[in-house]
Figure 1 (cartoon, rainbow, N blue to C red):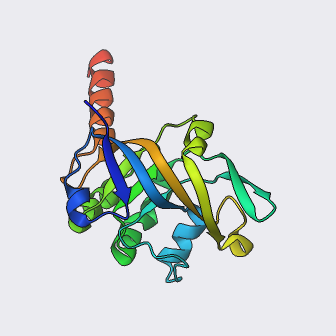
Figure 2 (cartoon, one colour; figure 1 turned 30 degrees about the vertical axis):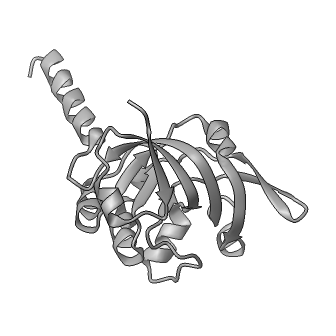
Length: 192
């Protein structure tokens, strides 16, 4: 099955049409955001970029400044569960349609994906250079002075960024399914 080509920003209908297990190639402008950004947005801080219909990427990239432009050296996903206390409200408040990261997220985020029409996209952990090669242009950096380079909001224009829908707006989480199956197998082997 061919990966689905998806452009950002996306509509609610486009996000709701995606199902857990769908392979996606994402193109358009995505925004990085880790702990400091999520705490800032959750705590009432303004976003310096328009996130409506957008995708936030749990990533602390390595970016080199070369004169008037930037070159992305590494842009792999970071563990998403750290943003669980904030993600649902950030999705609602800013109109996000997607979150990219690794490892999945919890029930509060899964419920928000369903309520507001968004998806969680799993990126390949350990492939920071592969992910970086999909960045065709850096549109800018925001909150760098406040939070530092890895925690800033970077605006990356990507082409064919590879990811998989692992949590959808229909209540399905592949992460939860794997965890339940693993626990059942462990209990079986322990004789419980």
